[in-house]
Amino acid sequence: MIFQPEFETLERPALEALQFERLRDLVDRLRHSNDLYRERLRGVKTPAALAACAELPFSSKDDMRDTYPLGLLAVPVRNLARIHASSGTTGNPTISAYTRRDLAIFGEVMARSLAAGGISPGDMFQVAWGYGLFTGGLGAQGGCETLGACAIPASSGNTARQMQLMADLPVIGFGATPSYALVVAERFRAEGRRPKALAYAICGAEAWTREMRAALEETFGVIATNIYGLTEIIGPGVAQECLDKRGMHVQEDHFLPEIIDPETGVPVPDGERGELVLTTLTREAMPVLRYRTRDLTSIDRERCSCGRTMARIDWFTGRVDDMLVIRGINVFPSAVEEALLRFSELSPNYRIFVDRPTHGLDQMLVEVEHRSDATVDDADALTAAVGKRLRETLLVSLTVRVVAPGTIERIEAGKAKRVIDRRAP
Ligand code: ZN
Image 1 (cartoon, rainbow, N blue to C red):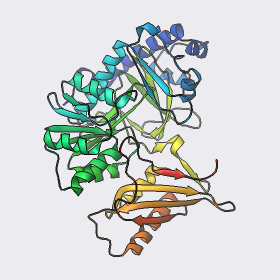
Image 2: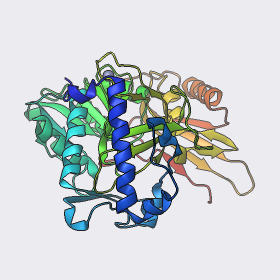
Image 3: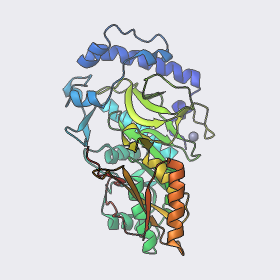
Image 4: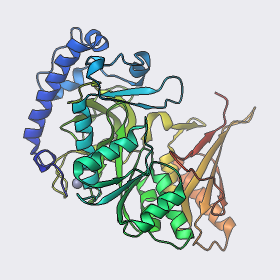
């Protein structure tokens, strides 16, 4: 179902008029309410057309770091209703602040996302994203409440309890990171049990591929869709796939997407790959202008077969930051995953090790589990075939090790650690 057809199916001219009006309002608000943006917008004209957005300055993760904790606020502190934060890999967390209206918008975009992923009012939705400072748990909770669905706030981890809830209650939808959804699905299969009513999984907060989705759907017996978001923008719900699976619909009346060349910063034509840049059009507490997400994708603004007019972004090829440079060649972990899952004998459980011997070239080892239900008669032949495919796809020399199911450590919460780069910095 479409939760807010009055926005989600708005004809493009009307949608763009709304975006333009909100963009002008945002630029004016930023000039008058925030020191960093006031400085950065000095001498910059308020856009006279939506396309002039490309002339506005960018913002980045560094701005969040430099203005920690509340330097990007555009409202007085006493107007805040909630704070979320994501753990940074280094230094301070990224803080995200919300007014009451921001929380209402968060609820709306999450309700749209849940609906696009197959959840209807009255359905039970089990939230296995973490509750607390992380935006996933409470974000999905708010989405359920706005949609009129019944939330089960299981939070992350405790697989036995997750399974019991899904086995005993008529849970229709499950929200988790894709790697954790797979952990739960595999455990159900291993124990010969089935969830009572599960039909949909909504997965995100972690990089994954369509190949991994196919494996998850097959193991879990559900339809799985991809959800996208980031703390800096609002949390999950920035974009969500519909059941037609033609890319993730960006909630464009709230978040203005652009795709740029990551090297030059210049917008690229629709359909071409580049870095996703997002502007929050309606956010009050902590609006961001042209935030560089570092995520690589392309955009399609054609109306979708589901009826939504909101532009669709493709599954990410990777993050600018996740790219490994092996012997001078760019390698995305997503490309490794995609190539591995072309082999029906292999499971989506894999790890990439990178080493650099003292006097030698980078060494890359890909370790992957074969499926528990696959018969591998000739392990050497399979290893050789996988190695050949990976070398041909990635154009880099590497070693492959096919291991038994269960060899690679499973995560109980959060994101799987796929890449172990042991090279000295
Ligand atoms: Zn659609």
